[in-house]
Image 1: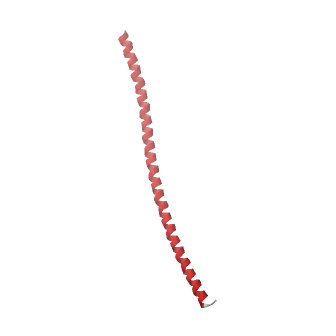
Image 2 (image 1 turned 60 degrees about the horizontal axis):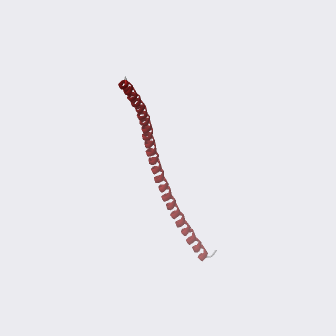
Image 3 (image 1 turned 135 degrees about the horizontal axis):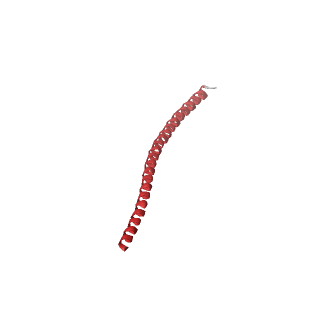
Length: 85
């Protein structure tokens, strides 16, 4: 190999190394973005679980309201029955 060819190869190797470093930096940025997104997903899951607990409590309250409505209706029926006597 001539001196010129060796110099050309060295320049190519250097350019390749710079590209590799650039790619590594880009990969790190992508990994950081993935990590940030995972943190957001975890936070969203926490919010979803909290909302699910609230929904569960609302369903329990709804059941209690319906039970109370049945009692009220029974009481009203009893009152009407007593008034009819």
